[in-house]
Length: 205
Image (cartoon, rainbow, N blue to C red; front, side):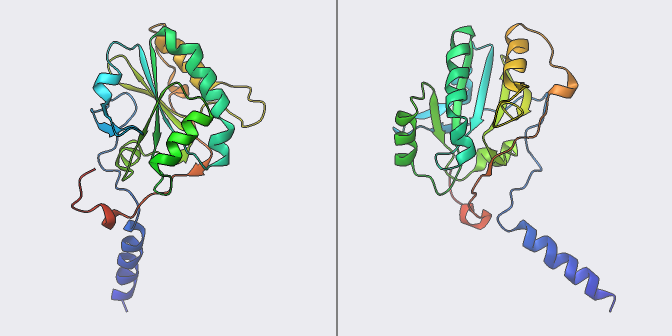
């Protein structure tokens, strides 16, 4: 009988591991973000180190073409990009949803007049590295590619009162420190639709 709890525990852990990302080597606040490469909708590869070079800040945004919450933020995202692009800030959209095709992303970019790159994270490996769970969810890197903020764009889908991303962007652009209680907020939106881990095994990104 003593073996039963152990067996049940092993079954539970195994069940959780299927399709769930491993977070052992994920990127943490105040740590440097390693370089990675992803392709855009025209099949052109881009490296983070090149996109962020000579920028005061880089905003990575996990977004979706189908999530209603993410889509409700499209205008706000465009406004943020327009307001900060001339202040040395690079905006990068990342789509990690397995069910959203490159063609769909391209059409979505045009329809919403995105003036920034949107890259396809085909096997959600970058989403796993960042522990991204939702769309939209944003990550702010400083000029040295140190992760300074992760979380929500603001505090409400309707009539937000606290604009987290604008606050931290202003601080980073001005070379100021972000208060500890502002470095992480809780993102809300649709969950990222990931592929199962066994489908990624022994395949290149």
